Every structure is written in C-alpha cells, then in structure tokens.
Picture 1: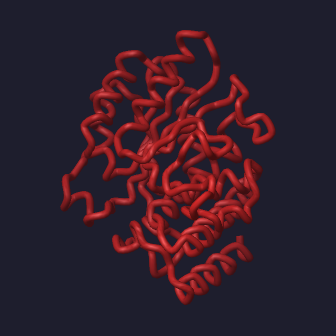
Picture 2 (picture 1 turned 180 degrees about the horizontal axis):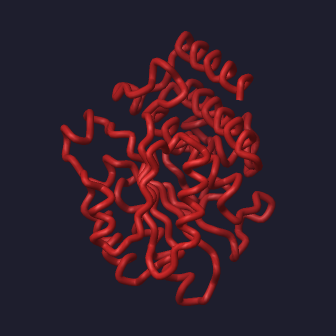
Length: 276
C-alpha cells in the first residue's frame, strides 16, 4: 500500500475502534487509538500474513502484549479480511468471538492469547527462539504499553531475547505516557526506556512521532536490517489519537463513548478520512 492508503486505513481502524467500544459499552479506546498506525502498518505492509491461510507455518507472528487494546487489533484484522468488519460491533458480547482480550481459541488469525500484562513479550520471545531452532524465516512482533513495561517479567524476557540474539524479534513500545492510574511518570516511571532496552542488548529505534506512517515505516525497515540482536521500537504516541476529546486524556483508558460522544468521534474521523 502507498503511504496515503496506509494513512486512510489507519483512520478506518480508528472508526472500527469507536464502533466496537461504543457497541460494547466498555473497552479500551485510548491505547487502541494511539496504536492505530502501528496496527495498520503491521497488518497491511510489514508482516507476511494471509487471512485466507491464517495458520500458514511460514507466516509472521504477532502478539498483543497489551491485550486490553484488542479493539485496535480486531479493527486492523477485520479490515485486512480475517473476519467481517460488521462483527466488530459484537465486541465483548456474550457468545462473540471478539472478547475483551485476545483469545487464540476463538478468534481466527490470532497467534496468542493475551491480557495479563507483561506476559506477551515472553510468548513472543519463545516464538522467535522456536524459529531459530527450526531454521524458519518468520519474524515475530509484539506490542507493549509503556505502563506495562513496569512489569518485571518484561525485563526477564528482554534479558533472554538479548542474550539469545533473537534478531527475528521486534518489540514495539507504545509510549503514550499514560496508564490507567495517570501519567507513567507519576505511577512508576519506566524512563529512560531506550537505555533500558539497550542494556539488555537490544538494537533500539526511537520514533519521535509513532502516529506518523513515514516514521513507522523507517523504523520497521531499520529493524528488518538489524542482524545479531532483537530490536525495540519505542514510539512516542498520543493516547486517544484522532478523537479530539480523548487525546491525552487518561479517563479514556478504559471507558466507552456514549451515543453523543460516538457521533462526535465518528464525525471527526470521517472528516479526517475525507481529507487524507
């Protein structure tokens, strides 16, 4: 896809996030919206995946370590063709295969269940090691929140990945600076993030604007060219990006828009889509 097409698709993904959380009456729009560009880039450009053959042994793998942002993942997967876009409205409903956290036994195209923060990077590192042991070429990607990296298990996995030189592993940190209880600097600051990953023998790419598709593309290109070490892409993003009243507001970490808020959000996003 062209950069313009990717930007337009990211707006579609944002619309899917709003549609699904509004229909559910619950969910996590803030961190889903901040990662809309990376979800889009991964599924429409970076990863070797085929919705028609979701179990292809040669496919790239993705693990959503910050599993509560499933609305963003589901929206990207729906528009990529894994399941109907209309099904996004069933998010968190009883009997739906789109639950509040990714569940590999229910949702087509998922590579791992996740939701308990800190664990996804361990799963991804295990997948990457498996590829090395079997001489397979697939790559593994995992998305973490900046609040999530306050979890100790993240750094155990990072130590392991760096020691094993898993250059087929890309760890992405959505650094929107907010977690459920407030700013990460006020809860339990993980800064400096880049230096921590470097200390665990990662190649680190810092992205000044993780909501800019060109900067994202450059970061993943650098990661793909890196040999002998796993890569950490640390992206500065805006929580709630794309919806004016949600941007940089911690209150939208885990709250769904009501009818009036839904209408305003969709109006704003459709205006953006028309001008991309």
